[in-house]
Length: 238
Image 1 (cartoon, rainbow, N blue to C red):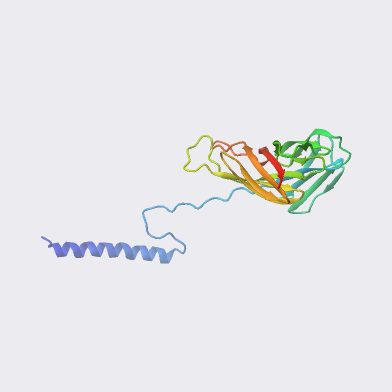
Image 2: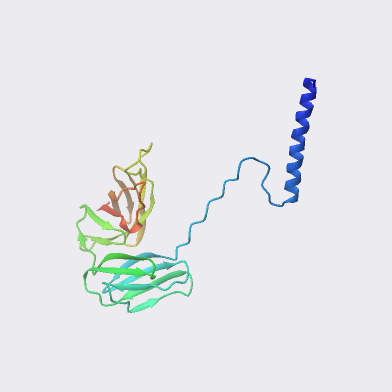
């Protein structure tokens, strides 16, 4: 009958044998996984690259200028009000910013559609001078829209929301989170941090800018299109 010491030596021999076989297999197969009964976890898969994205639509006098960022060469169709093609186009041969200009656009509300034949987006846009709002009064802008504060006051442009960590409406969070609202006052950029509940204020170019609301709120079941944000602003001279 084997002794306790004998059984221990036998177990040790079996372990050494397993390790030796494993080492030999690794040496014979370059790049083979280390000996383990656990399968390696596959790494993350890189998302498919986007081909293009709408940067913005600017009203320049009686013109509308549509800017599109290209990530790869692609043929785009850009139409105003469902059928009018641009009067001028500047499209890079590869990646870069493509520009499409519509001249002599009447003041008022219009629609712009950009498509590559497979995917497309439509945006409402207002041509003509920006609306005038009273100093200290609240006003709402969508991304890309502008408003002038007073007849001779500063021009406010809502540039976008580069950060949004606010707690989703259908989730419980230890912290409420906040969003960063990016805007420009007569071309001077400023970023205002806005809590989920409450308002945020910053100062630039001699004015105090308050953001008292930002919609929509995040949700765990959908992504927010960057163009869908609407912010409520209030501007006062310091």
